[in-house]
Length: 170
Length: 165
Image 1 (tube, each protein chain N blue to C red):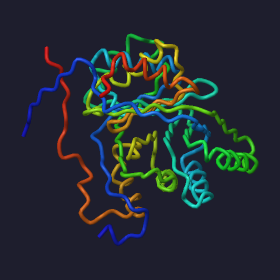
Image 2: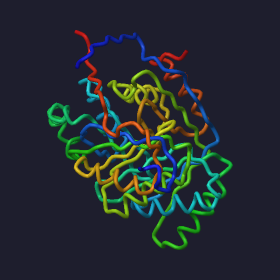
Image 3: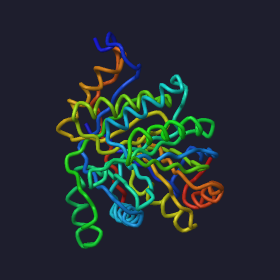
């Protein structure tokens, strides 16, 4: 009976399939990575990046099923590869809707941080807050969040019920 | 069960470009829980009335984390005072504020499931010499944060590869 728990009202939580996160520290590397992924038809499913006074910080997530292909593509670009940080087995948690509430963002960062669970990156969209964590800890993250948010009884399943595989016709 | 659908378009279709100007971008180096404390305190300060435009959070390879918080210009003074006080309480903390900045955002059919969209957007801006201050792609949305007076040129640049209704 999740709706009995007092907390910030949301409509649902969605979990992604397993992904690989690539962390980038310069705009040039970010541009090169996006180009390589696009040229080889690898979907960057999640992206969160911002300039800093010195360089930038960016998180780029691709499907885990494309991990080996991405490694093979990037490996020959030795200088780029040396500067990238790969995080394997990452999952995305999407909380919706945010209704532009700062409290909800603060709550997610606070509670995930206090629980000692990893939070690698976060980005908001028009109505959702998506953040990445360790895929193996994704259920712990959901349990933590569910102690502080109020979900309707009839909320949709957390796990995806179908998957879209994008392929281009020859 | 597998369903095969064919989707084809000459240029990437969008539901239109949306633009906001006169925004304030705050960059703060904060660990996860610290960022949570700061964001909640900021929300409390405004009685929960301060809406965000965009939030990005990233952890660097060196373990440091950065919060990017985009607010409307009307909240600039409150946010600036808050982070100044936060800096005074936390020696060594240094917050960066950039304003005014502009935001261009758009979404389109199955953007989250298709490759190359973020690359197209970033490439078109780079070709026009437009600096990208921050970028977020989550779900089917692309958010681009740009320096002042550049959103018009950015719309023109993106119009070269994205279809706008």
